[in-house]
Amino acid sequence: MPMIRTATPHHKGGFTLIELIITMMIMAVAVMIIIPYFSAVTHSPDPLLRERAIGLGQAMMDEILAKRWDENTPNGGGPICSTESGTGRGNSTYTLICPEPTRNASTLGLDGEAGGPHNRDQWDDVDDYNGLAEPGGPGNTFYDQDGAPLTGSWTDFSRQVSIDYIASNELTIDADTASAGSLAANATDSKRIIVTVASPLGETFELVAVTCNF
Image 1 (tube, one colour):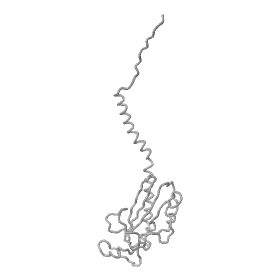
Image 2 (image 1 turned 60 degrees about the vertical axis):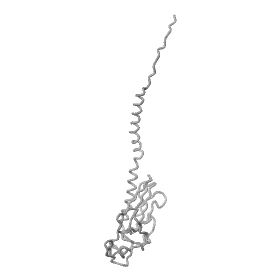
Image 3 (image 1 turned 180 degrees about the vertical axis):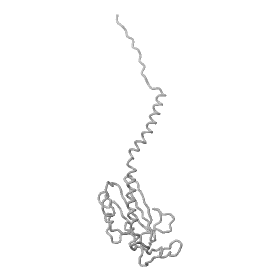
C-alpha cells in the first residue's frame, strides 16, 4: 500500500521590526565611531607639514634679524638718520638723535649684492631680503644663507619675504599695519618684516617682526 507523506510546513525566520531598529542603531553608532578614525588616518601628515612650514619661515626670520638694520648702519650698530629721527627729534614719540648726519636710511632692497636665493651669503642688512621668493629656480630647492640646498623634500612649499617701513608710533603692528613704503624719502625708524610660507595643504603662514633703528 503506497504511503502518502504529508509535507510539514517550515516557517522561515525573519527580523522583527524592533530587531531591525536596534540593528540600525548599532550600525549608526559604529559608523560614527569609525568615520573620525579614518579621517584622522587620512590627515595624519598634516601636523608634520604645518610644522615644516613654520620651521621654514622661522629659519628665514632668524636669518634676517641677525643682519644689521640698514646698509648705512655703522659696524657695531648705532642709529642712522631717517625722516622720523630728523623731524621728530626731542618729542615724546621720536627721541632718536643721529650721531652721524651723513648716514641716512636707504631705499629697501639689494645694495649692489648679487641677487637670487642662493647668493645670500653676501647680504649684510635686513632689507636686502625684500622681495625674496623661493623656490627661485628649477625644482623645489630652498637654500640656507651660505648657499647650500636644504635637505629633504620641499615639494609644493614656497617662501616669500616682504620688508617695508612703518611708523614707529603704531599701537598694533601686524601684516595689515599701514606701510610707509620702501623709499629712502619715506624712511622711518622701524622696518617690518613679513615672511610668508605656503604649505602643500594650501595653507599660508605669516610671521611678522619689527626691527628698529638703534
